[in-house]
Length: 107
Length: 122
Image (cartoon, rainbow over all chains, first blue to last red; front, side):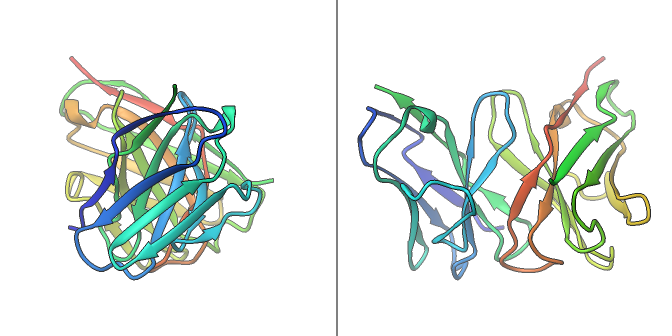
């Protein structure tokens, strides 16, 4: 199975900060990497698909990039509603796997 | 608008069975693949299973293979998850999710239901 490793596991930041979350795949997954945001008690929400494509309706402060087996989610200027947990997901091959999540907290 | 509504969750004893349903509306249900994803209390997301648009392709996580069965009824716009031989570690919120595509690499879950809680306990 492909293992997805996110870093950091948790992160404290302030409104207006630029934040980067990393996700590394244990083997090549091409660009078949998605990012989701989840708030407490709610279903996950798709932010980015295919490593860098912004899902319709998602603010442009969210962006994704890829380099080999390393992927990055960047939030350019944190807003209060962005404090949540973020997950990466590979869909290159089944079983589909998620990263363990990155909890973004208010500093 | 797309709506996915899960039902069928509840409390079940270890070794028992449960069938979850996911009623879909707001899109042509027979087009996309569908997924089940679960989340144990306080834990991360775990993918459970996927079924292609026509049910010709099905895959499972190793943790549920041989115990869970995903199926769909395109005439009823409904996705199912039959769960047998349930264990304590199956306790989780179960989400159904709509794929963007019919099946295959590069898929992504563009819409999710609100989830249904399954508790396996004696």
